[in-house]
Image 1 (tube, rainbow, N blue to C red):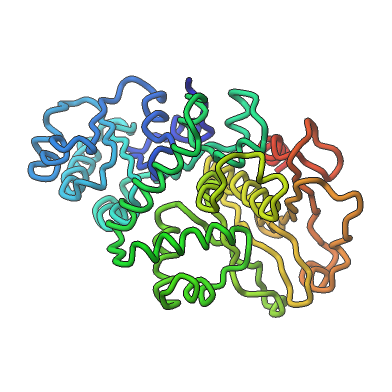
Image 2: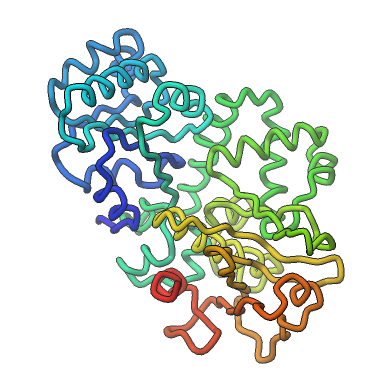
Amino acid sequence: MWIYRDLTKLLSQNNDLIQIINGPRQCGKTSLIIHLGQDFIEASLDDPGLRELAESDPELFLNQFGDKNIFIDEVQYAPNLFPSLKRRIDLHKRNGKPLKTIYRLTGSNQILMDKNVKESLAGRASFFELNTLTVKEILASQNIPIQQILFQGGWPELYAYPERDAKKYLDDYINSYIEKDIVLSAGIQKRREFLKFLKLLAGRTGEILDMASLGRESGVDSNTIKDWISVLEKMHIISLVSPFSTNLSKRLVKSPKVYFWDTGLACRLQGWTSASPIITSPQQGHLFENLVFCELAKLNLNHQLGWNIYHWRSRDGEEVDFLIEMGPDQFLFIEAKVSPPKKQQDHSKFPEIKKVFKDKVPQRFICHQEGSQVIGDKIPIAFLGTWCQQTY
């Protein structure tokens, strides 16, 4: 079953000669490109034979496709291919040929991609990021409880084949991609400590990042934790949300909050084996907040909106989950609550918020778990993506 991806529109409208789609393994990059059109010949460098040819003789590898458009999957495995692509693109431009996409490249290992792409294809390619499915994309294709989406995350295969066991799928993903691919490509030596760190980090999703504490509990120093955090960011596993800061807001807490790009990974690393027990657990609130972050951040990527997403927390206890900067002097507060509160604080009276925004205090909305319609300032997460697009 094909699930429509919001990134489809951007890719279809873009005519740059090379399109590069980055994102973690199994997030749907290959399926998306195949569904964009049948005029691209696929060459996956997961195939050892093709990988060897692309690396040892890139010109021969490209020549075998003639004048056909090429989709090269997992292109990071053949760094010698990039100079040949560069020469062909430059020749295409010099010959005055029509401007249309002739190469689509995907990569799931951003560490390896960064080493090769930035030097060879700078200024010659358009870059796109794809992550797992949004709540909006999932619910457009099927009716499934939000709590189940929170538990199994947005992995397309779990929705295309609902008979698959989510726990086993996530276990296999953690074992194959995170424990092996990431550890090897980043040169991580302390594998056991790294896995312990991952589980600890998952347990703190939605919280202020404390590297010193993570280091003590993982058995490594804070510099190692800093390196590991950087690796997970590059590999699209986690994202750090910085506090909003201006010259007028020096009293705001300066540490970022940490979120996983997919709640399924966070849930499984926390040890959950099904959706129902999460409902009564202390982690429910933070996991739902993570799901709201995923919806906002993926909406931003899929439509290249250029938003900046911050959190707001002052030393005096003022706290709002997300502050979205949508443009110059255009801000929006969004609070994540599993169930909307009957009575909420008037954030416009918070001293630091008043000090920073004066008479232009941003509107505040509550994003909650269940519901079928937007009522006032309360937005069900099922409609968050659509509501943001229509309203802003």
